[in-house]
Length: 139
Image (cartoon, rainbow, N blue to C red):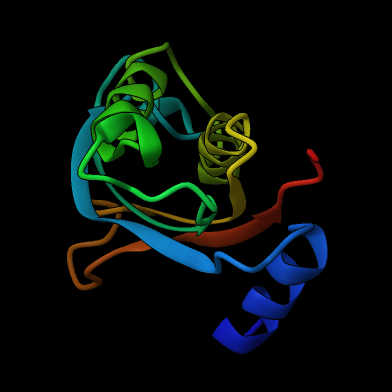
C-alpha cells in the first residue's frame, strides 16, 4: 500500500479530518530477543531491528508544546522493549503483530506500519524479516 493509499485509508477511518495527520517514526531500534522456530534459536537472544511508521490523527486541540497532546514515542519504545523481553516468540510476524496491536490501542494512531528484521541469520545477508500494516478500527 502506498503512502497515499495509507493516508486515504486513515482519513476514511478518522472522522473529522480538519486537523489532518502526523507521522510518528521510530527508526532502527535494535534489541536482543528470543525469537525463532528452529531448535538452535531456542534459549538464545538474537538481534532484531524494529522500525515503526505510525499515522496519527492530529487533534483539533493545538499541541501547545505539551506532551499530553501528542503520541509519546518514548512510551511506544518502552512498550516495544517490554514485548521483546516478554519471552520466546517463534515468528517475526508474531512480534510485529504484537507491536502493531500495542500501538493501535491508542485510538489516535490510525495506521501502524511495523518492520521487524532479524540481523544475524545469514552471514552474507544484512537482514531478513517482514513489514506489516494495520489499520485501527477504533472510533
